[in-house]
Image (cartoon, rainbow, N blue to C red; front, side, top):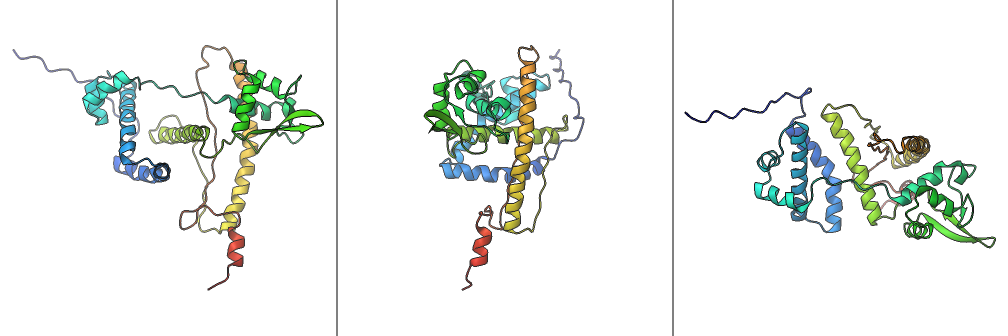
Length: 301
């Protein structure tokens, strides 16, 4: 007698129809365009990108199998991802699986506390200049309220390097003075790249979650066409104003809940709340602040 046929795994149709692959690929081309611009500018070519994509395909195929209650064998991962089995075996030995997202940097946590805690804010609810040392409110006490693992001096030098603060002499005292409107790492720095990856990844995760028909996440936008550069710049300022209000309220509530959840066994979730604004002209360039003035004073040839 022949060997009995292997029982097929139980499969269920998705609760909602999945988007057609061709449509997804068309949308992906639009999404990838600005990312490829970044890669080309940084000197990364197609070969480098393909090498980076291989382990990512493997990992996502493995997670898809586990979510479906199936064994994540090399053959199953290879079939689902399109990556050769020998590459899957090599991947298992390199420790690429199960990467854990990095925690929010201590610098950003300190800045968030600076903005949220009334003790460290000015009358306009912005972070106020603080004495470097001494009793609260000082930068020393602010830093120690966030972490006991990093010395305030070390944290201060890092925040100076990131352009978040300056140290000034005021009336014979060293004062730590905040710079800018928030935690914005220097363009091109490692911190800015890490923040870029985290922001875009979570935005994409929310959108993909909604496309797959999973519990709905906030992922919406407002857009307008056929407006002047001047109008685009005015809307940009409005966007910054609205974001500043929402950001302050979210920081306050997130800080309160974080303190309330401290030490709980079920405190295993994370969140990210963001906003963005983008405007471009017919050539794909964002309007410059002086674009309107240049247009008005341009002499025709």
